[in-house]
Length: 68
Image (cartoon, helix red, strand yellow):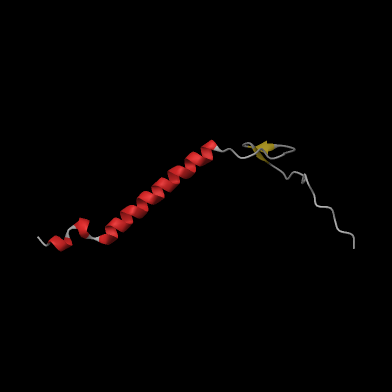
């Protein structure tokens, strides 16, 4: 058997394994961060579907129009 052809001596396989492990760790970190830090509640008026607003709410701080 040729020792140079062993699977553990192929750098592209190690690169793929490292990238896969990094992607998996980043995905888990994003899920944990998303579960710990909830978004602020948005002002809603009217009906909702699956706790999502069915219409648009009026802007709270509308910028005043500049005089012309």
